[in-house]
Length: 315
Length: 283
Image (tube, rainbow over all chains, first blue to last red; front, top):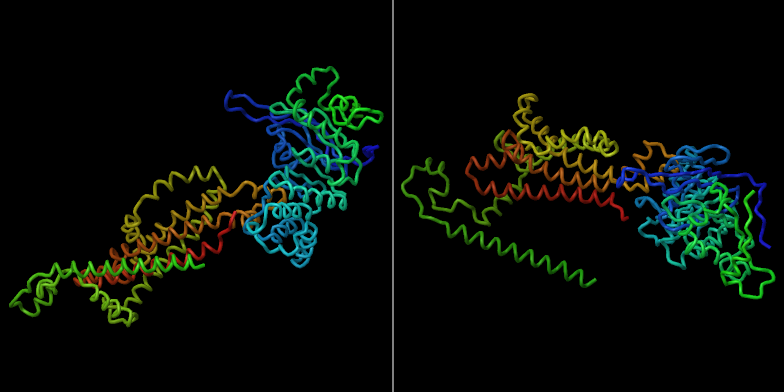
């Protein structure tokens, strides 16, 4: 059976009742992009957020990074409420956001210098080389971003984020601008790196397979405006899964179907779900989609899947 | 590749054809304008009147006459035979000195001020009325004020260059700085980079191509203006040289001065284009 979540690990990120409203010029009022968003990320955990465009995913990430402030609610990182940006929370942006006049090495060195301003340039160079080797870009250090492919540029972005050894890694759909093949190989590399460094990570994606591969838990957000966290899905696939064999596991299709069902149907029709008296948006239900142990039908059918999903309140 | 070579060769040949055609038409026009020679004139009076009255030559020189004049100037550019008679090299040097000094001072003021305006929306709004008011004023309109206060003709010329080259650099710098991609600024923010370091490591390199374009425009304007300013102020410089040749009714001298002005202006522009290439980056 899939691993139980480690509740003894300390909470790295605690999001409580986060809300973001923007002024609406059309009717002089305000639009609430999302509200009552609450979830936690434990140390060493990899959490993905899935939702449609417009539900405020990037806004949420910007708030976690400190680039934006919430209208109400708190973000507590490692026991302290955040205010503004921090080197403890590294960001991998959707567009690689590399400085085009700096080489790959200089881009990473810029980050390393910011973190450790007293290091000698030799030490900085050595440190950057480590991370360039880690993302398999050895030999391309002195190239400018214009001379690198999309995948290589994103690798530099990832190396830059890891090079400052942050407490938390925040990623905003880092692979969505890449082709499927490059995306696949970068996902594999990310899995390896995160496992080796036990990095606490929070990633936004709309790629279901990516979430199933990378995440320990998946936060599901409904459509905006007034988006809510509707459910948190625990990944029932075993740790150590790889892209090439995870689809063979019996829990793969229940997981996948559950997420697709959410994206296609439930994200839109959320209002009906919350009319259920015991829905608390600050304590969203936890789902663990898994294959039925005594099922005679295929694990692919949605009715089977609904029966297999065990719902329990988060403690 | 052969296609590139062909293209360059074809364009070069076409330029040559246009030049030959132009020189030929010039020569033909000048010969057509030839009138009858005057007779029985006092030799001193004839010398004062010039070749047009005495020999019936056209007012305009023929191409080969200008060529000969150009050669005369180039072969001895740095002679100094008194305040009204200096070599073309010396005159150009004076003009270049004034242009580069005025331009340099303008850059020292325009780039930091442009930074301030680009980064602070309130400063932009506050300073904008002054910029819009003074920008369209012809630099030569500043000349009387400069002469009255500065009292030195050479320094006044430098001031006029300063006041005309400051605007393109100021506006371009402000534009370049305010249009730095938000992404890059966000990267600096997430890395807790201090404002000064962000200004030098992120904003300046990002805005550099735009700033250098402003400089390129400014130097072009400055070179235009110095010729006019020196015509007004006199003394030394290529503008003064042009006016002096005009006063001597030496149209040949005037035309050859035009060629030199064009050549030096071209070199200034090329130098800044080279600098712009150094700071350019592909996005």
